[in-house]
Image (cartoon, rainbow over all chains, first blue to last red; front, side, top):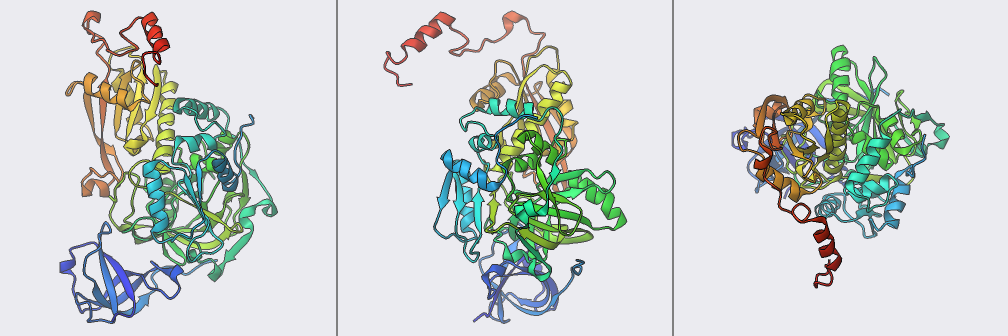
Length: 89
Length: 482
């Protein structure tokens, strides 16, 4: 059973996505402990699979204009990437 | 300076809406995740009273006002007029107030600024502590800013701009959204900050008084704070930001301060847009990093839900675009009888009434409006003569279908500036903001002999005045109710 759920937007053909290789993508968190943080986005390094059970967390796929794909994939997040500038207050 | 009735903040406006029967207070808790958006969408599609949400899931202490200005009645109330005022009367009043000397804003002490009741800095300034709604299923994120404006200042001229630029929450400190290069803020940011690789200070104002929102939608050359003053008949009260030298309305509900970051892009969208579609793709767009949030006690966010007509984006943008065109055409001495942009066209189609005093006057009108700064936001101009009621859709459709010659009456304009949001444009044209425009000339040519001119067959046109009066006088006696 998946621990957590995420989704991501795939702008190209999902069939062409490479599975089981470390890749960078933006994911949105769908099941945070504090529900106020639902849909928080993050750049991550992760492995993904079209199999729903291969990796610990569930990954829902949306296409470029938000179309939700019927079957979820799975994901293992390796690292959250900090690609944004630090605060300068 | 004239004294108009106006509402200094969103709270006074809510009371006014309630007193005019234009408000539904929702006591039941609603979910920020789609439920609130769905309610506002249905309200827009059915043209119902504005929903005032008292309880939002996960966000105790916050409230929300949906569809604040989605009808002409609510616009009339915002302007201190009777909600039953006709569209031409509201238009004339708007033009009258906004033609003349701009009214400078005044700066008030922070102690007199309710938007400073709570000041969140550092880690406390966290976008997820605000109830940004997930407006439509499938959107790219939560859009905290749907009925709001972004304040920015030109670094060379100090000219201030208030504009509605949508902003999607990315993470605790980051928002992202499109800033088109031909927009006022786009010209400032991409023209003056990015070449120097300098971040641009911004302040997002959420839950402003209604006339500030109207002004932020208006494509007027007058700075929007002064334009608001003209609509109010009184200076707008502003207060200094916490982290930069921008000034924001003192009575707003929530202010988000930060910097627009040059040479950095994050994927934004999709989003349900004013055209009634999700058209523009998820793409790398402009990044806002936040430094501070200030808000009133128990803040009330405002929620607009763009989609099929009619929401406030369509209504107010149509209203102000059309009336800026009216000012432009009148300034050029064109003998127009009025200008009306149909909100149902998602501000793509404008109807211009004219006394056809000379040949090709419709082309002159189209050249003027298509050549103006207003041009990227619409692409269809219908020119009708004075016997067509520009506010009556049936009348306009009748004129279009009967007076516009399918070849001679249609003039196409290629290579125009467009927007990425045009549903009819191909992906490449959307990417490069390329558009096309068209004129529908619904005036009869002046060189036709008078005896050849078709005569409009309507009650008002083909019966003598005494017969019309007799029929109207006896209408109920004939057995008709109205």
